[in-house]
Length: 377
Image (tube, rainbow, N blue to C red; front, side):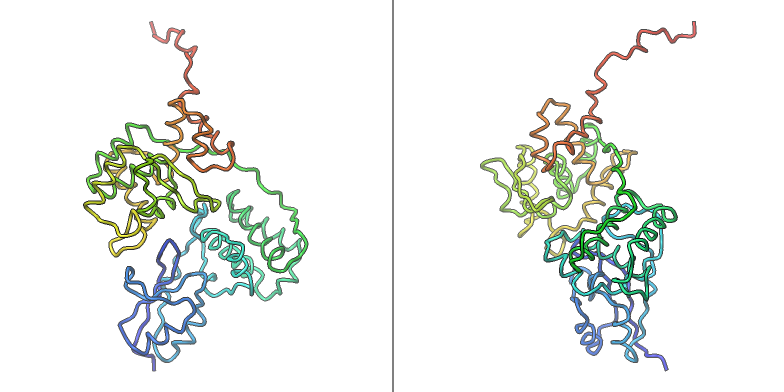
């Protein structure tokens, strides 16, 4: 006889981290069983129990609720690439929920102070690797096996250059950092980085987005990201005390590379911030969700996308395009590229120099076609 109680599993994002939602009608016995699962916690924002995806074990959950409740895991079968990667092809990654990481892999990543995004990506890709060689001991997988595995991903799955590098790094991390083996070398050549030019909005397009945005928080958010050249994660983490109105600076804490930096606070932005603060009264972070705490990355993406749609912009608009636009517009205004490098927090000037290839100033010459008569007569 099947149990009458049902537990519904599905994917979600909580605190910028992929999680597995656990939904069921409130029941003391089921709550007690959920609490025993590693990583399980209650989220007021989501209104359910959840477990971080990199800690979730479907087999363990089945065992815990066997005879107590029916576990519906159909919501986990939605194919999904790891957050932060550029993989476009839809494939089945359901094995990641049942594949265990080797002892010490996750712990070592945390000890090395890797970012949450990198940890999620490495764990996902190493689970793919382990699943491919299911039944084979990791120490018995030869370099030739690994080369063939990577080659198949390139030829059959057509993975991107950056993903190829990430998958190689995830494998090398296990053998070199966890197992303390000699440095690993694979016959697959590391791909040369693709030179993709950043997308840029005009000043008029950004003004149109701001004029079309009536919500004070959303308007403040868009204006701040653009005026300071921020990454989305940097905007999320700004605290009230990071706004220095006397020195007209904003402190960006723990940005990419775990580095702090200061960015310029525009008088126009300060005025907008004060209006927003009086209206919203955030408690800790400059931008907070409805239930408090950090504003979510998904909300920022949607706010900016919706603003572009209201403004009638046909380009693909996303948070980072505001950062690209900030850098390009400053370069076109004649600001020294070294200052732009510092504002953006780039470690290498080469990263900043790519904006010279999208600045309209590189076309500031008279085109010889102008000296040719194109009239039919």
